[in-house]
Amino acid sequence: MRSNIVHPGANKLRYEIREIVTVAKRVALSGIPIVWENIGDPVAKGEVPPEWMKKIIKDTLKEDMSFAYSPTKGLDETRVYIARERNLEGGIQITPDDILFFNGLGDGISHLYRNLNPQARILGPDPAYPTHSSAEAAHANKPHITYRLDPENEWRPDLADMEKKIRTHKHIVGILIVNPDNPTGFVYPQETIRAIVALAKKYKLFLISDEIYSNLAYEGSGMRKLASVVGMVPGIAMRGISKEFPWPGARCGWVEFYNRDKDKDFDRYARSIMDAKMLEVCSTTLPQKVLPKVMGDARYYPYLATRARRYEERAEYAHAILSKIPNMIVHKPRGAFYMTCVFRQGSLKKYQTLPVRKDLKKFIDFCLTKASPDKRFVYYLLASTGVCVVPLSSGFNSSLQGFRFLLLEQDIERFKKTIHTIAKAISDFNAS
Image 1: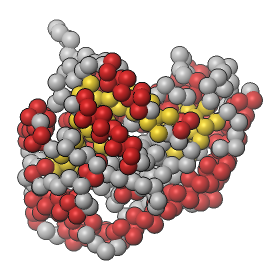
Image 2: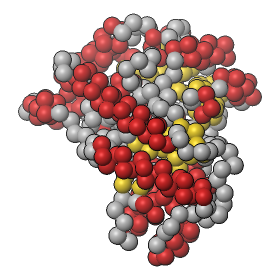
Image 3: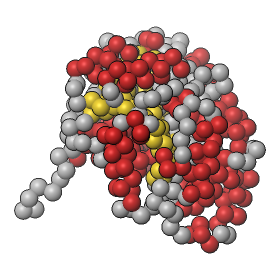
Image 4: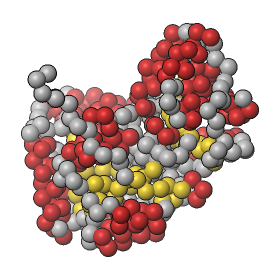
């Protein structure tokens, strides 16, 4: 081209959760069945929406307006429903005008970062969810700035590290939390969120709380949404139906803006996001029309509770097996359907391997050129057993060495077999 057409932050866009699929398909061609433990799609793992929910969707499809544009912010009746339900929970009160719909939270995340001043930075967790960390890094064309989630302390955020980063990086304007967290399943205690709110107030920052899994927190987890503790601090909560209904293909998420009236710059930022969405006309109509009918059904929250109990049971089983392995840090998640294992520092070596067929070894070794030690384990696990997990370092922009797997498998015996396969592979890898 006569001039460079590539955005300067293009190289920061990474999503190894899906990138590893290409490697897995090559492994599958050699005749090794793949156990997909990388992408958190409940439907792909066999967990389909219940029939009563499908009936609501089918009946809504009979309405001609399901095929029409919706208002840019979202359907009026849907935003009224969300605002009413939000306000009944207590905490900050919002109006329908504080709600903006997107084509999934991935779309919302993209809008949030690309409408920031190019100099402004958002401080996020380590491990990070790659959609956030990549979008933030690409927006700034600089490495994502993170605070530490401490694996030695049940994944609680290191608040001292958080404040140090805020003081050191003067361009930080906001703090991101993912609650419940992906990839760790950590649920932020109320006192921890209050402490983060206090930091935001002290340094005049705003907060982003990604709450896509908030209704899949386990019983007794102490889950509290940002709205309950945000006080007078400007904030953005992010919600969606992809994981809850579950209906990831619907691409339906929304953000809730808090305390726009407390800061003129934050209000202008929120309006810029709304203006940008207006250029796209609107988000998908059908899932918006369905949302109040499904969430307002008496069967909805018992259905979610049943799912959360199933994830918790799988988490307890996996923890019982994997936590016994030397040199591993493993905590039970408190929400969502992910679990993370961390290798203790120094336990991984550059030469460790697992038995791999000769026709695959050359390919895997080529893929691992200059790779981190945990990625080496993940790729050898894949080529040796067919189990496809995600490395923590490259997959979640982390300084830690480990991997994430899912709690979504519907067949409990198959799930147990996968956990034992992973456990044996760790032991064999460490002994190699």
